[in-house]
Every structure is written in structure tokens, then in C-alpha cells.
Image 1 (cartoon, one colour):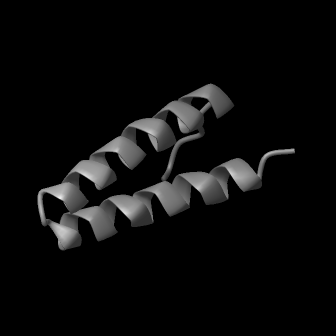
Image 2 (image 1 turned 30 degrees about the horizontal axis):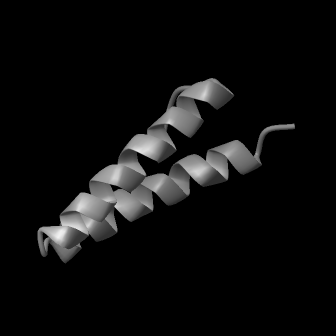
Image 3 (image 1 turned 45 degrees about the vertical axis):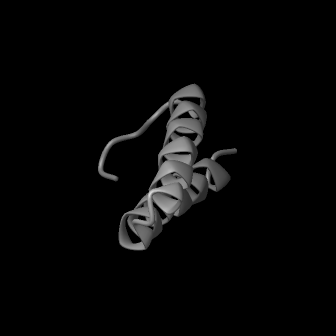
Amino acid sequence: MGSSHSVNEIRTAIRELSARAELARKEDRPEDAAEIERRIAAYRDELAERP
């Protein structure tokens, strides 16, 4: 990701991206949904690295 994000920023990003991924799936855009899910996973990894 390059820069450090606050825990609240990460959680907000995960929430917003989850909603976007769900919408992409509903709109039959599986490639977009998969890319968004990869971004969510990266944020979750960043969050898991926090003390």
C-alpha cells in the first residue's frame, strides 16, 4: 500500500470496498468484484500486522 493508514481508515475502507464488491457481484461484474476482494484482503493483512 505504501503509506500507513489508521485502524479506523482501514476499517472504513474495508466496509466501503465490501459494499462495492457486493454491488459488482449483483451487477454481474465478477472480475471487478475479484479485484475489490484482493484490495480488501490487502487491507485486512495490514490490519492484522498491527499490534
